[in-house]
Length: 236
Image (cartoon, rainbow, N blue to C red; front, side, top):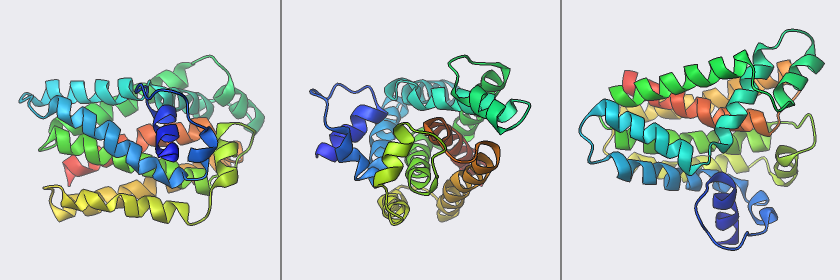
């Protein structure tokens, strides 16, 4: 329970009382998908009775961003700045880690949010799609936490220091209850492929651009994977 509470205090703004020791979560970062069930589940409850798909999609997007405190969305903006920066690796890292948001970050935020909204609006069930997308998004963070070599000290390097090679496999097992949802097997298979491919590609990209991974890259993976999984479900 200490690990779960520490995870939710890190990944959400839910009022959970006295802060838990962060190390408890660091030793069990494979629990990330559990936060996906909670965040996605709360968003699903908010939209399940909304019949208009565009309104439901808007509420779902707002819910996951607000419940998470836009924590990972901030990483997406920083990642966009770093990816779009011109120059050598040092300049890209400076753009990634500074506190200002440039055109690259704004563009990345707009593109990913548009994909997320459009995918939700086109899905047969917004509630189901946001739940699946959020759980898969959290798997991507568990994957990068274990597989992403840090290029600087910070939260990611701290979590990576406790991570084990088996953590992504345990996180994947925690995603298996999604098969109980009333969703076509093809859609779930596509979601699983994108869930793994998205952070794997981002890992290769981050290694090439920055020489490794930091918390911003992991946070960006959450936002990008969620959007891509939901879009893939809508298209399948």
